[in-house]
Image 1 (cartoon, one colour):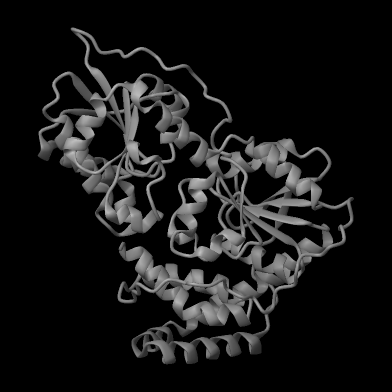
Image 2 (cartoon, one colour):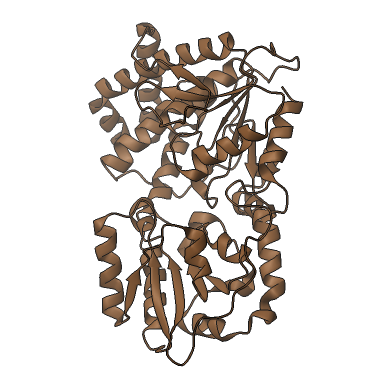
Length: 452
């Protein structure tokens, strides 16, 4: 299993009983996981997983009566400006016909909204916090760490000043967030990422005030979504539900299938004729997730790229185009160059800004785990998923039909040579089960308005 998942499981094991008792421990757990395991010491790992829902004893059930309809009934925290974060929030907001909405704007990490986006400004400066409660929570955490792992106790003791500081900041944010929710009569708090520093605080504040909370799926499901604390989790289709619940059957109790916000309901373009010919090579587009090796602390994604490089090295009538992940930096670029050079495979990096156009120009599309493969399905392009066991540990299971999943060089080459019509059923099943056929933005908007 990836080191990052092991670390995540470890911190869940430490904090789960604490989160159930006191609301501040959820944002604090996220901070400790990032500060100690991702940035600092990598000692703490566990293969244990959460096998039951976290029971928040302090949470108030969502109110049955409607809030004041003059307030902001739906509050979005997009977390960042990417299209599957802010863009998806806008899609939902544009479909709201009766419910008023606003986008959360932080004074500490502002998002570049457009002038037409209604905003609710959150003052993120440090305010009042209860010093006695801060010390109490610190003592509870130290006692728990001593019961779990003596080395962790020593490490947290060394980080005492940071823990006390973070706990005070969380208290301050939490108090301000509760006031904001109450004063604006918010019915729903919606986010694509409840684990972000601000969303985690607003999630807790909302549950303390009986405000409904919803999180929508962005990108492919991973086990880092576990255990989500939102009242509802809006998945794409039946495949994403299975991916989330394959190791924890209780997950499906919170999941609602709403469709994919990131992709349209219908296919964009008809399948185009292959571009290969006597003097022109076929175009193989690889949607690279090589940055995933760094994110997940694994080599699963570079192993997938090696299979691609070794498979295409001897196919003279094909040329490889690599589309990099938006977060890829120069080190990732050099790693990709090195992998293809070792395999003796010529390639180029894509220069197309538009994913839609990049796919349209290609004759075959492949990825290890990028949700962009849905674009190939929508365009009817021949495509497949290059998979390995460690990717299953990260994502739960492959997200395309088994006929479109390959694991070896021989299987990839064979898949590329299969006639498209032989796989039409697999394409249709993959689109329906992964992305669904519903108009996600409309469906989520109607759901929000019916409960406001």
